[in-house]
Each structure stands twice: as C-alpha cells, then as structure tokens.
Amino acid sequence: AARDAVGVVLSELAKLGSFTDEEFQRAKNSLKQSITMNLESKAVVVEDTGRQLLMSSRVATGKQFRAMVDAVEPRDLTQVVVKMLEKPATLVSYGPLEKVPDYAAVAQACNQVKEQLARQL
Image 1 (cartoon, rainbow, N blue to C red):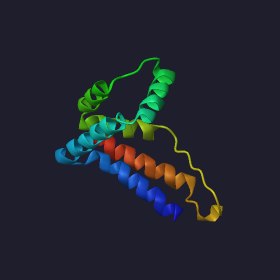
Image 2: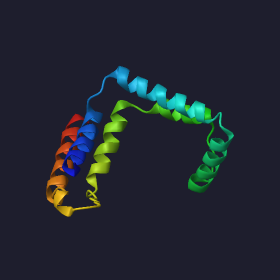
Image 3: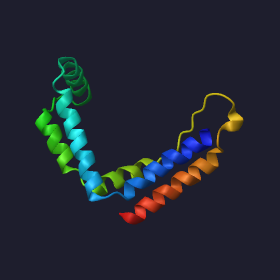
Image 4: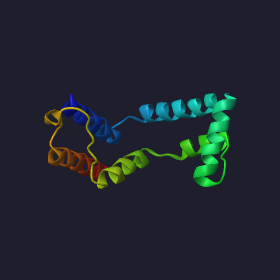
C-alpha cells in the first residue's frame, strides 16, 4: 500500500504538466467559488482574518483573492511542482518498515517527475 501511495502521488504531480485549458479554468472557477462560499461563514472569516494577519500582517479581500486566482497561469502550476521536487523528498512511515519503499527509489522517482515537468517549461 505504501509503495502504491508514492506512485499515486507522483503520478498526480506529473499530471500538472498535462491538463486541458478547460480543466484548468474549471479548477480556477471551483477555487473562486469555494473562496466566495467560505466568506459567507462568519467563523471562517474570523479564522481566515486571524491567519492572514499572523502570516502577512495584512488582510486580503475576497475580491483580491479571486484576482490572485485569475492571475495564475498553467505554467505557474508546473513551476511550483518543479520547485517543490528540487528539495529532497521526506519519507515518513508508521508501521512495519519492510512495507515502505526504499528512499533511493522514491528520490529517483521524484527526480524523474521533476525532469519530465521541467522539460515542459
């Protein structure tokens, strides 16, 4: 199961280099809708305001967040994954270690995905 999980995660990351414009737009619309819906809950607004103040000393409006989402381009997603995979993988397990994939194999698989996506930039 652990070996399968690593493969699934890397497969999903690799897909960030191959999605249609329709899928990309649908994802952006879904995120903007989620932001808008969350702003209707006072508890979520208060929690989000506190988090924003702690993390950046400022609070962005829903309109500003939606504009940030609109500004994202397909290439941005691929660049984020490539940057993320430039760091050494962290492998954490719980339970029998003999079921955990070898770290070198995981690191090599991460590197292959990174190189595949980097070629698309």
